[in-house]
Image (cartoon, rainbow, N blue to C red; front, side):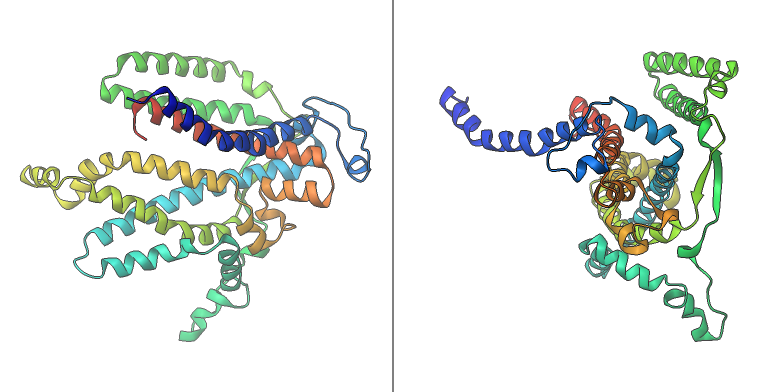
Length: 370
């Protein structure tokens, strides 16, 4: 049992870290939030004694509805689709590699090192390498010519094609649809586990969302007075390839560690019951790997939401088809001297990352799975 003196010594030891954390993390977050609610723009940024006025949420409103901030809204769209592609492919490839290595009887250390090696590189180095590999007149495009085939045409950097186009004015409708799909999937999970109380709550929320959609309220709520089309820029695939190449090895390591913790007795019991190799993976391994999958989604998701250096190295800050909010924040703050707008974008990114990480931390601490 710790004495009062021990607790005092421990508190004094961690006090400097707490003070520094409060100043250089939460203090700067608070300052950024305050700056985002001011008119600190070009003129004030160049003045020795800037005159700054509080304007509330005007910068945020302009980012989401202002005519001149169409690029930021496309950046959010790019980030959303990049996150889905990057996280999904990294999980699938990492799981596939982990299953292959788990079956190896020799060379496991060699292949594990090979697949993990890309993670040791910085994103700037990865971006530079993959820009060379994906250049229109060289790299992988000229590989087919070595065996007499026509050159490849993966012209990702010059692509302006878009898919999955939607109207930004109808974002409330799309958010409501997404929420309904999530509630239905969660309700199905609670029903399978017999969690009736949770099922009732999710059912009520789903019924409310269905009523809102049926009434057409979300269709009448338009963020803009005019249609504004956004979609998935196919140029993003070049960045996705580079990022998946770097992080799929990390996901492989997570899944491989998870596979090694599964008792062999469970697999043997499944084999006795007549389960094949695929069924063992489907009904034994994958359910037990759920905590690993959730952790990987959180880690990869927060990397995708704040991606900057990889895109900067591969496409540059002025390439709009591959731009993301972090790129626009850099341009607004350091090239346009619009410090308030850049701070607002930074706060939005912080909120998006928090929406991903905080529920995970709360769930982990409440269930004791840390």
